[in-house]
Image 1: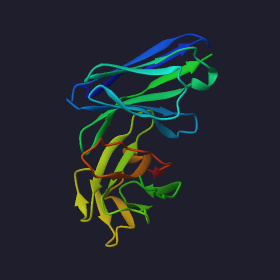
Image 2: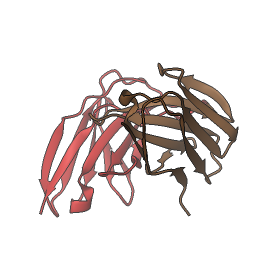
Image 3: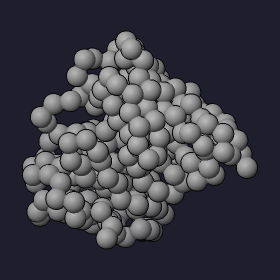
Length: 110
Length: 112
């Protein structure tokens, strides 16, 4: 079983559209995150949730909104997509000593 | 989290040992040293972590300097599959959330 799974793996969409990326973890972790990796490969944390509550919200446009319906899920909704949103988005979850990452969603905005 | 400094890239030959250095001169007493790696087109994966003593696991060894201001990740026999970006990260050991903050890492190139 995949520990952290995110869907879709690839997402191509037009500017101005609204899209969502789903993430699920089966590890029983309390903490989940979203990271963005840009074209220069820099991996930057966007959000962190602990027990369904937002604990970190880095400087991210408010077009990005995380939603945690339960501890096992942290979805990322993006409104009014822009060209600069093109990147690979990684979901992750962690216990106390180790984080597990999903395989990433490559978002391309055209 | 305190900052770490790593070389941008390193090269190795297959089946030779690799020593990946990391400097963390501003490390605090409660910071754990963690290493992650990111293989091409994959998410980062945990490699190893330690506080003061050297650590070994099935993937690698972690050698920590006595003053804790530097550490070295050791891959005992590099394989082509070990070609990845390796990240050295300091994480505050508290009862709160574990939040990896990534720098640029070291890109390891393994030659056949």
